[in-house]
Image 1: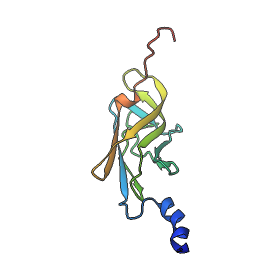
Image 2: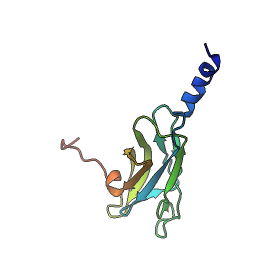
Image 3: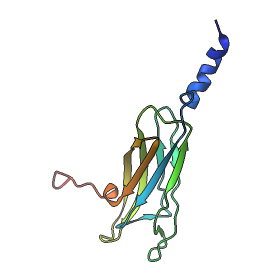
Length: 139
């Protein structure tokens, strides 16, 4: 009986699969019709099976026309020690204002993050932040 491997097993499981390559998740933003409020409590997180949610910081220059908002959001890279065994998701509330309709709202984002060929990328677009329409009038 070898006690050393048994003692190391929890450490190896907690760190990911032994020998697994690290994975960097890239989150991009392609927002043209909405601005994200800089002062509101927007809080995106990356969710991976078996791991605590990792924060995705929002940063970028202020809008020239609406200084309370980001003019654009810069891409963010979130490193993981190893690729997860299950699905990655980008979740969290974003407080956005539509440039055309001039309505501000909270959008709860919940997007899958595809992993392909050792890379993980997701792009948040205006369509992801569009208000959901009710199928039932009056509700």
